[in-house]
Image (cartoon, rainbow, N blue to C red; front, side, top):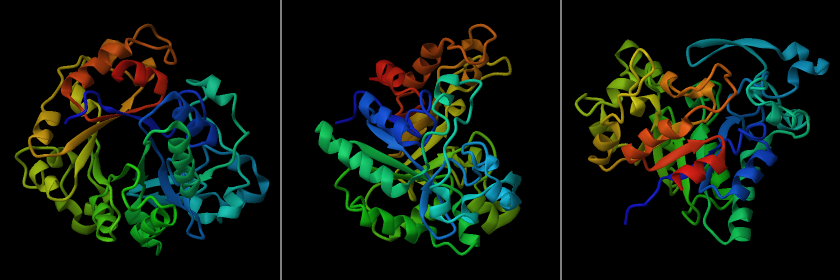
Length: 338
């Protein structure tokens, strides 16, 4: 039987209210009743799977204020982009654990920023254990949507990303299908590698509205398909090819909303229907209520932090028939989609 509503996934916990990927962010999301939470995974110098949205941590921790780490500021090329900052792979887990997390968007989310400096980063194992405990305490199955970040980049540094993820999932008793597990990435290569290692779960490929997947750029250069070509029902590298590799796709919401140049939606587009026709589940990201993140036609006033007419935007997404939505404010997401 199909679900009557989409999965509501706490995107990095509940970052509309607490700094992303912190214990309090996950605790709040779980208490509010999300169906699953989404940890992003990068790695430390000693191979620990660390939960951070990016391996560059200058804007989400207090590392820039720590004089003992000043010399570790670097400029690196990550997935073809030059980035300057502090990177998880240059720190041991013991060092990362001394840092304190910060709100990524303090001007937009001052309430969340009031919790700055109070919580250390988490490991993947911490989140897996937390969700298992919440499932037992609440008497319901709660899932984990694990996003593997920058797999090709970490592989170039000598990390066996797929093996590290698989080993961690097995050690935490999350690899056998006992609780709902989704493994997702913007790189299909690592998804196939984790699946080949026998981890039971749903494998979901993330699609940007623009650009190309870096694993295929590294392998095929200019011949790598664009994300738009992969989302196409007719392209050689499109949805038919993806249906042979993964169980679902997770798309930038703009690919569903299909905005015109004035920021008016022409959606829902056909991408959800086209993917469903090929047996693929479809998630979308990220449903946020603030004007800063809404299409222009759904904004109300000039204050970027104020909530706009998010329900009208979300209705277009709901009408498309998606199977899962990533939300920053779990109470709003559950209230609308639930």
